[in-house]
Amino acid sequence: MSLQVAEGKITVFIGTNGCGKSTLLKALARQLKPAQGRVTLNGENVLHYPGKKFAKQLAMLAQSPNVPEGISAHQLVRYGRYPHQRLTAGWQPEDDAAVADALALTQTGMLAERAVNTLSGGQRQRVWIAMALAQDTPYLLLDEPTTYLDLAYQIDVLELLQKLNRETGKTIVMVLHDLNLACRYADEIIALCNGGVYLQGPPEKVMTEATVKAVFGLNNKMIADPIYGTPMCVPYGSR
Image (cartoon, rainbow, N blue to C red; front, top):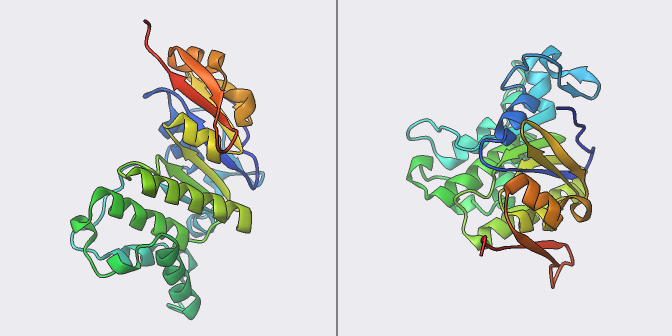
């Protein structure tokens, strides 16, 4: 496949389970090395970046990250500042400020002293997002960031990401399964199918009845979201 992610925009990958969404995201974050071809960031092959330099550019939140036993939420969020640490300087006031801001933005301050492995799935997910925000990178990749979250927190997280994008110009790339939320919050959607890009563009171009039928094999009716005006998919069965 060949694709280019829009700078300063929110891009969402959609597609069926097993179509390669997470694999593609890991390749962009250089967690997987392409067998052929290359991934570039700012014109440079991502494999050529020194570790800390790359970590200052791009943060990646995986789908089911592991957490050390007994670590507190505050300690986990602090790990996001690792790329910014210098041997001669140590922890700085700006590091404390970045951690505090990340906890506040994700509404996880009240969880700061609790062990991460004692939190609910939704609470844990928000703490991981806080760690990614504390890393303070211009590029942020998230694999299904709304997993485990109830609907209210799904909206909160997506609105937070949209606010960060609009106010800071941060480039955000994420995988979402909810097509209607993808249409509401994405500037661009990339539909993946059969190991390649089926269609890429704004939601109005990509999210059509024909695309959903081709990519998901699903009968559907596309209507306008009554509040946001974005495409809204109403699926139905074969009958």
